[in-house]
Image 1 (cartoon, helix red, strand yellow):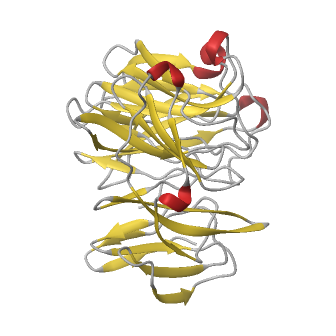
Image 2 (cartoon, one colour):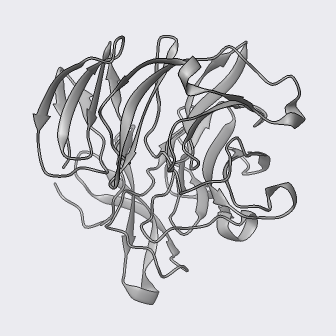
Length: 327
């Protein structure tokens, strides 16, 4: 089946329903939001759309955010390119809503590039470049946590330095000294570690002179990050997860040096397509259209397959021994 709901979001399926971000209308009448479809038939069950009150967004240039489903309640959450962060029941009833631009000074970008929210425990965590008031006044790549049930604001975190660019990498969760943490790439070209319950930045490692959009991988005791931009080559890098935390939370995160943590580096780069991990193998589509397989333990490039002249957005998917690669 096919459905007329254009956009650049990845669909998410839960309990027979498919949720996806999209937009309808043109010009001043354009609205963006979330659509829910019967996953078996493609019948649209409901949609919740919001005005695009920022006219410079180009929806078909880069990927936009994807919905996230709460496994505990079945509720679905979205973040639109215009800054609407909202939660709904599986039947489409609005639970709560924030306008991140108006309330937190979230900036937007003409090509969309909006981060997908994530859920951990009772928290919904999202991110974006914001310029607000007080400690959050200077423009920064920040993370925000809200109570997933009520929408109540819980914490804000600025773990990175001043951003060079936007970043829409998805946080990856883990444990550090008994604390729930997440790892993420940031707009200043770093990889950071943040306390997921409090927002306290723990450490950061600077890797690149531009923002990093790809999501990091956790492999055993290493973090794997890929970065690059069309006009400058990057790398695929594995680093030992550091066993450090700040002695004083007010002093900010511990700033670490890459050369003291690096395990290996491979000459594979991309600006926005995230890698995936299958057992001990990393699969990623490089900037110039090569599908690459890299040994996660050593960084050895096992093979490359030329699929096209360019690939900067979609991530590969693994299932049943096969790789599915949008181009």
